[in-house]
Length: 372
Image (cartoon, rainbow, N blue to C red; front, side, top):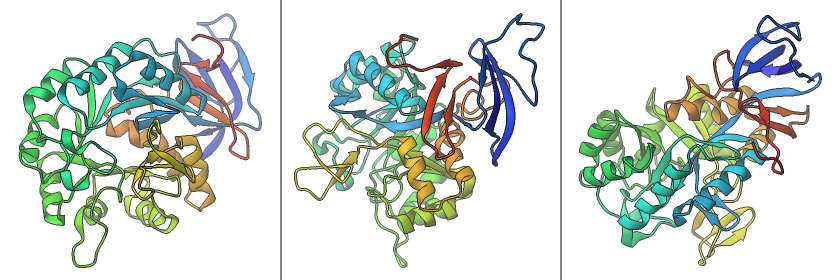
């Protein structure tokens, strides 16, 4: 396929280019590419003049939507989420589990593993375990009764069921530092649902933690005498940090602060979208029955992208935070996250108002009514 005359996102901005794909991979990028080449006698051509071409968005923290929850242990939920996300411009994702008892967590991870390769929409990159190795003081909407210290044997058993790419844990809980030292070579360990002090967080970063889960949320606030994990995230030169950018979980001024401190390479946009079962929807976010405790969002990355643009965050920074930065967190940036030769042909087409026009996965336009 040849996409001609699109305004292609190059990593720093947009440039009018042609992009050729074949076999699900980007094979050529340039100006005035011929519609035919020596490998293809003819090539379907899409005239994209006036359209903007973005890398496919990557959500590394998403639990479910509209009553569908990947923690329920069913392949149906995982595959339904794959299709839902593709319709919203997300081309790859990490199904994210909650804090669950051992058997239920294993069932959820097994269902994710069994779903890989069967997706009809967004591709599964691997599992994100949000818990159970978190602080009982900062559970939020998680199940406090299922919180437990990190256990290497449980992790190995889960890893045998599906590739685990990201684990959200609290660095101050017993055994967390040793766990990070042992497992950070095989997956990313993230600071999350934590009561850690600044010093405890820095020690975690020195021990193998390298990411922060939904920065600001479920952790001590930024304080001038007790800086806590947020200051440690800002001060680090290499740790990445994700943000829920629905305008509810984090206020606009604090989003500006985070993007300014994290820069173009360390900020990551996530949805933390949940099924909403048993929760109350208030202003596009889910709350526990108390009406005060946030339980997750009802948004998606493309909506967050538009939200961040509306509050004045630089577009190149926002796009990187939705694409290559999350891909880098889960060690997939050589395959996805940017429009480059040799990478998967995952991309979006949007109009000049940044309305989503089409989602392409492996060079094929996603259509909810047509099987890929």
